[in-house]
Image (cartoon, rainbow, N blue to C red; front, side):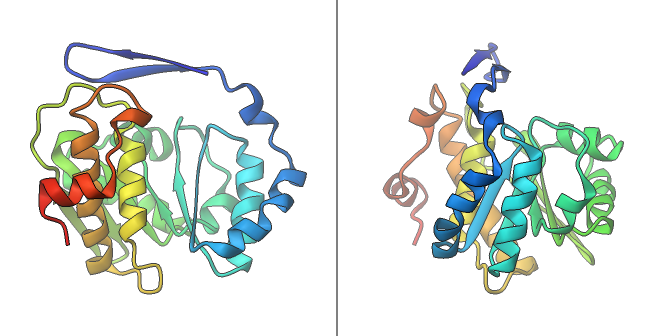
Amino acid sequence: MAIIMVNENGNNSIIVVAGSNMTIDEYEIEASVEKIKEYDILISQFETSEEMTLKAFLKAKELGKITILNPAPAKKINEELLKVTDIIVPNETEAEVLTGIKVETLEDANKAGQAFLEKGVNFVIITLGSKGAAVIGKDFCELVPAYKVNAIDTTAAGDSFIGGLSSKLDFKNINKESLIKAVNFGNKVSSISVQRKGAQPSIPYLKEIEEIYAED
């Protein structure tokens, strides 16, 4: 259960009662293996047990799948999990909590990103709110600008962003160009989401994105 508070600027604070989320066990991970086999990408965050996320990511990597970690709510991460994470997607606050580097500029984002890369992550995407998102690899750091909109509720902005970029990710050829393209699409999705109230109800359908941004 989550109680979400939104201020006059559209920014949110969330009180979460994890409940059954934290009772996911190894049996449920094993029961999910057949589903993991069917898909290309496995996404997780910290609203479930980190221990079980590690087990799921290890299974996904055995099967040749791409793993994406959204480290929210932010906390110290088991470095074994980072070693099996292809892409980590923190926001600027989470990046600071995890690396100790205050992220205010693109240069800061690159420093924080490199700290993740040194621990085994392949690529880093740090979301920077209204500025957009920094896409970071071993030899590059690019800002993908956000779309300027009148935000009324940022709830689900991060989730819709990750869902959008994952849907466009070229999982067979992840590089600077393909990541930037996927992140740009994620920015489109989240730009629509923040103009609506609520979490799940605010996330647009593909047809809406195509109509608003003439997406092919």
